[in-house]
Picture 1: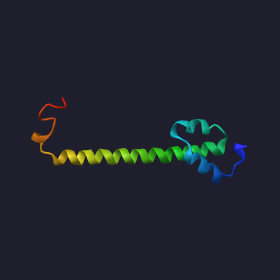
Picture 2: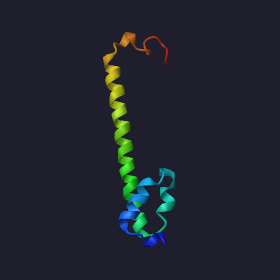
Picture 3: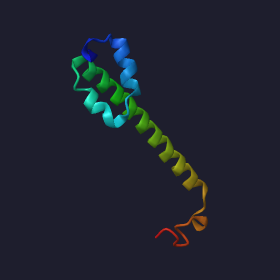
Picture 4: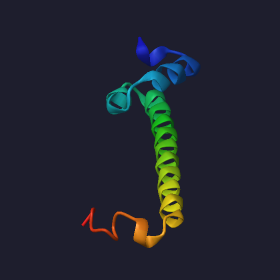
Length: 78
């Protein structure tokens, strides 16, 4: 039954599947595999963008602090 759904419905279902279960969903048939692959790539891209943004925010905060006031200078993080 799942292998005969219209692509639009498959897209909606795949978008709601948790990351950990995407691999199982990809084994239904080739349409599901394509949709799962696209969804996984979209999620990976969003995660990578989020991590990159957090990294650059941390870098900007680190540049704002003078070295003497940073925790590293006082040996708190060594």
